[in-house]
Length: 119
Image 1 (cartoon, helix red, strand yellow):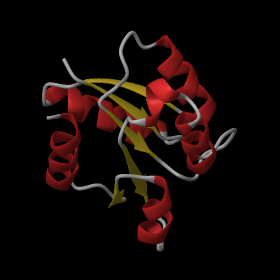
Image 2 (cartoon, rainbow, N blue to C red; image 1 turned 45 degrees about the horizontal axis):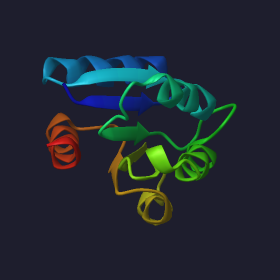
Image 3 (tube, rainbow, N blue to C red; image 1 turned 135 degrees about the horizontal axis):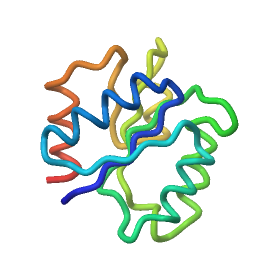
Image 4 (cartoon, rainbow, N blue to C red; image 1 turned 60 degrees about the vertical axis):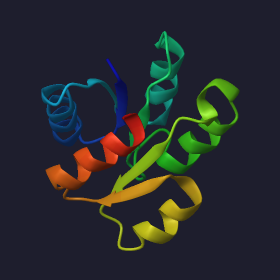
């Protein structure tokens, strides 16, 4: 089963995304900030097929997490989709991620993006 890591400090959004992904046949785990996401990656037996990443989070934000992710060869190739309500999300995601989705998230575009990355 394909694993997706959901990194968002909003518990309701994180839990909803995990539930949606699981309902569509993916395994999903969550982290509330970049530090927890790094810990989750270290704990995974196999890397996730995708990381859904919020940008604005306490402790370690999305940009700092992405920089740390890219320093680890085993994690550097994991695609990242930025999920954010930022007005300039396209500009920010261009340097950080494979793709982006604007919050509030719509189910079909989200699942299509996950499908593209995870097959």
